[in-house]
Length: 294
Ligand SMILES: C[S@@+](CC[C@H](N)C(=O)[O-])C[C@H]1O[C@@H](n2cnc3c(N)ncnc32)[C@H](O)[C@@H]1O
Image: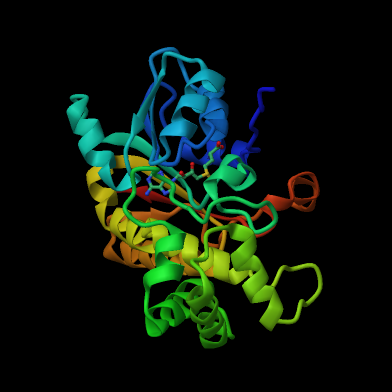
């Protein structure tokens, strides 16, 4: 049986409206995923336009290559923090636009083998890049109490961080924690469930962010935007939680204050009721767009 993976691109038409300043330009989709946004962008671009589609996940890149099936897309296995180098290697000094759709794709979340989901059992992996050095299992089985507590607080905004970290250390004394369901159960046993949200949601978010150095990458790319897009070019960033959105909001504000950039939308745009109804994963999305003026 072959699985057809899907990922519904969020705010796709709005992103195309706001990002595409030049119909025959060069763009970077820094988080190609399954190529959903890129497909929408290509549908609105001319024959000589190009999109460099970057992703840390080599499996996703292969799926995107087939799904998009368009010579104007060049998939590249790289972090978006390498976007300027990828352009330079292709003989291009800078791009007309950069898109970042942060976080993980439905393909990664829905594939139990990748270990992102607490609802399906799988190995405790959570790496975007399967060559990456750090799995979630490494963190829960080897890190000290204070380090696990710190990431649960800082990356999960988890109020019960220390309590969960202690339970993890207690459980690993018996045997290594190898699977997503083992970890979900450890948290479920000590935390009450409020409403529909699984009590391990914040723990899983924190581990994923730590394994992939997600916030460090966002901070880095925000400092490199001037090397990636030229004057007149735009950057669109879609975020899914307050930690990412705060970073983007504050950095965009500083860039706008410098006079070299201007905010295209003063306030973050969010999907409307209908989009959230059709795609539950859109519910926490926020879109911010900035333009380089100098
Ligand atoms: C939300 S998905 C993108 C979905 C895509 N926009 C679509 O419509 O199919 C985010 C993707 O970004 C990738 N990713 C996360 N951090 C990355 C990084 N630093 N560099 C490149 N790709 C990254 C993930 O592997 C994932 O495939």
